[in-house]
Image (cartoon, rainbow, N blue to C red; front, side, top):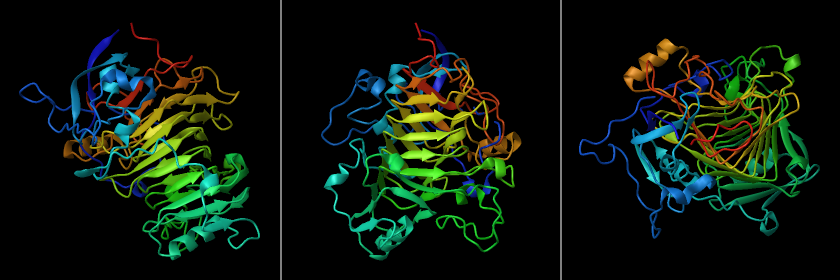
Amino acid sequence: MRAYGVAFVLGGLGLACDEDSALPPGVAGGAAGAAAAPAADGGAPAGVIIPAAPDTPDVTASAAGSSGRLPTPPVVTPDAAVSDEALLGTPERPLLSSSAAERQTVLAYLAAAGSIDALTVDHWDPTGGIGDVASFTPQLEVAAGGMYPTIQAAVTAAVATGATSRQYIAVAAGTYRELVCVPSGGPPITLYGTDPDAARTVVVFDNYSGKPKAVGTPANPCNPNLNGETFGTSGSTTFAVYSADFQAKNLSFVNDTDEATAVSESVQGVALTVQGDRAIFENVRVLGNQDTLFVKTSNAATVARSYFKSCYVEGDTDFIFGRGTAVLDGCTIHSVTSRTDSGVAIAPSTDSRNPFGILVNGATFSADGGAAAGSIHLGRAWDEGQGDVTTYATNVASGVYPNGQATVRGSTLLAHIQSTAPWRPAATTARPYSSAAGAYPANRLYEFENTGPGSAAPVE
């Protein structure tokens, strides 16, 4: 077992810029983060709070195992670091120790939300999924030729009711070529395909970041970008969820932009954007190329959570990205090579005050037949809104900056994953990847107990 003496960082300071004023994460780049000092008395570092959930016992590190679940999630406040935990593995491929991994579990990621400066701890546990759709009674039904021929029409009708109780929307199998916005402030909505095969119920569109549009014409209604002459990354999304407590099951969210015919090199095309808190997606497919799944928040100082159960996400470049707190649990993360032979899967832009970014737990990282061994990187930080390393360094000094956080644990990594150095320099700034603090804060990109030909060599 090799411990190379780098403190395991769970938090830092914060990010100021919203995504819409930032360069999209399609540009090469990597990152680095600073550890907080331990308490003077040798106890827990300042800022670390680990309350137990009501009526639940304490949990040892071994209880988490590779499953990434704890019955009692530790809650770690911003600006906290576990300074007595050394990372294992190599500087290029850091691995969490068992005790550090105890703080990187599904329930720990999902335990709190709200303002970074005053998080609300609710110990949210969505791991059971949303239930059997056969038991649901829909208030609205979507079908070609029906009362609601589009998904957006049904969502708009559900919002217009003014209801506070959950609204169920059943969607018949078919392809719905439309843009959908589930706006903030509406009732909780459960949207589900009546066919259990998610591939048979598809919502799809083909907007992309650089696609021209007239000023005053909205992009996606949730992010209309009225003053823009192009759609922008956020505006390119096919399906946007800005409301809280949204649920979806048995659906495909697709951006089918044809980059070969695009009139701009900015071809980021989002299939699904999630901004509302406590969103659950079960048995869904999210398909695109660059920037497929966007997990974001309303602003940099807000923590919002989403949970993906038994999902399938496909893309080539930074295709799971953003500053939201997201868990992908038991999913397939599939890289495609039709446009590039050297892709990147994950690109978090987590505010450095937020210890929890993107957790991939119990997943399979697969690829199409065009992917050569070692050609795809697990991920890179996205230095959202930073422009260049000079700007980033200035913002680090001011205490306001992103430092993307991701953990991949208990997952199967096939041979296409780069096995020696799976983390690339940061998107937007090209900040070099480093697992140790130096000129910039250390990166917060980790692994734990992964297997398969693309995984790290076992520690001894």
